[in-house]
Length: 550
Length: 90
Image 1 (cartoon, each protein chain N blue to C red):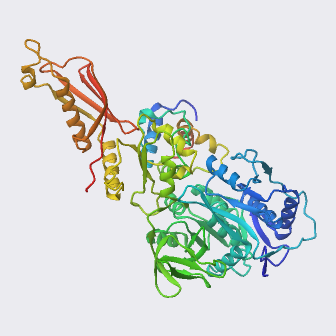
Image 2: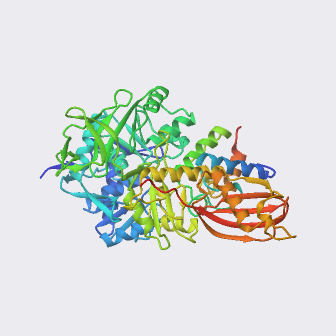
Image 3: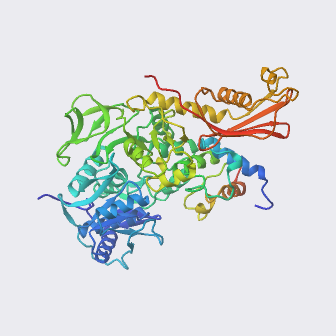
C-alpha cells in the first residue's frame, strides 16, 4: 500500500500557514493537529464549519489522523442537514464561533495550549484512506456522495502545483476567496499548499478591500485563488493589489478580456483551473495564451457510452464529466458549455431537474418550472427564473419554502406566477416558450403606468343602457381596461383570467377615466379605474401565456 | 455623522439596489428597517458584493467584511444608508 505524508514540507520551522499576519510553522501546526485530534469526539463523521481557514485545516488534519471522514455538503439549508443526518447519524460539527449555523451536536475548535520544542511526526497516510465525502445535489432530489481518498487528493494537488509552478518549497502564501468547504477551495487553497511545501492563509476575504488587505498581510511571493465573479469585482473596484505572482480562477470560464485586463493591471499571470466535484482538478489553461485546456499529466479523457469521461490512477473507473468537450489532441480540449440540465451559480452546482423537484414538492404549487436564461454579461452571475402555477399563494411564502430546501443562490429571480405553464401536447416545456414568457414578464415590469380616456358620449352601448339614464356597461369598461393593459404589456388580450372585478359606481357619457394598473409579485395585475377621485371599478386579472407552437 | 439623513437619501440607496440588482420590488415596498438578507429583501452574498462595488464607485467608500459593524450595516436599508452617509468621500 502506498502512503504520502500529510505535508510535503521538510523542516519543522517551515511555514505552513499565515494567521492574522503571524506565521505558523510545521511544528506549531502539528501540535495543534494532535491536540485537537486527541480531543475530538469518538463519532466518525464530521462537518467542519470553521470559518478561519487555518482552523479548518487543523480540523481536517485532526480528523484524518483519527480516521474520521469530513463531509462537504453543497449547502447548509435545514433540509440538506436533515438528509446528512440520515446518511450519517453520528455526525457532529466542528465550529470556531459561538453560534453554530446548523442543528447538529457541536464541538468547539481548540488550539494546542502550548507548543513544545519537539516537533511531532508528520503523519504518513495511506492512499486508500477515505478522508472526505463531497456531496452534489443529485437530479433525484437526494444528494450524491463522492468519496475522496487521501491518495486522490494528494496526487491531484501535487500534479496541479507542479503545473502551476508552485512546487519546490518556495514559501508561496495562498490567499483564497473560495471557502475550504467546497471541492475547488479544498483542493486549491488547502491540500495544494500542504502538498507543495507552501502556506495557506487563514482569511476568507470577500469584498475587494478585504482581498487587498489579506494579500497585504502576508509576505511575497503571493498567490490569489479566486473565481471570475470575485476577480471582476476586484478589478472593477480599481483598487491596487500588492505584488501577486499568480492568480488562479475556477468555477466558471473567465472571459478573455478580463484575463487580459487582470494580467496587465496587476502584472501577474492568470491561470484557470478546470475540475469537477467528482474528479477534482483535471486541467489548466492560461487564457491570455490559449483557449485550450491542458490535462494534468497522467489524466486522460475518453468517451464511454457516448459520454466524455476523465480517468487517471485515482479516477478509476473513469468518471463522466458533465460539460461539453471537444478533444484537441491527446492532452488538450476545448469547453463548449454545460449539458443542459446542469447549472452552476457562483461555483454552486445544482441540476434543473432537482430544482424543479423541490419547487413542485411545495404544498400549494400546482405546476412549476425553473429556467436558466442565457448568459448576457460575462464574468457576472446569471440568475435563475422560475414560473409557477400556485393559485392564492403569496410569493414570499413560496420563496421561504424554497429557502428551506436549497442554497439561496438558487432562489428564483424573478419568480413569476402564471395561470398555466406553456406545455406542449406531450407535456414538454420548450425553452423558446419559457424564454418568451420571461421576456413578456420583463416587459410587463417596465410598462406599469396610467392610461387615460374619456367615455365617448355617443358610444353605441348607451342606446340601450338605459333610456333617459345612460351609463357605460361594465363589460365595455372591462374590455377597455383589458385592451389597454394588454397593449402596454404586449400580451394577447384574448387569453386572460379575471380573478376579481368590482363595479363601484357608474361611468357616464363624457366622464374622464384614468386606468392605473400594476403587476404584483404574484404576477396578477391589479387595476383601478377612476373618474377624477370617484372610484369606478377595480379588479385583478392574470394573462395566460401564449399557446406554444404545436 | 451629525444631523439627520434626509428621506431622499434612503430612496436613493433603495433605487441603487433595485437598479443594480434588478430586484422586482417597488421603492415604496421596501421597508427601510427590514433585513436585507434572507426573509427581508432576500439578498445573498453575490448581491452584497455587487452593491459594495456600486457603492464604492458612486460614494467612494470600500466596505469590509472585518468591519465589526458589517453585520449591522447590511442589517437594513436604513443601516446601510446611514453607513454610506457617514463614510462617503464623494
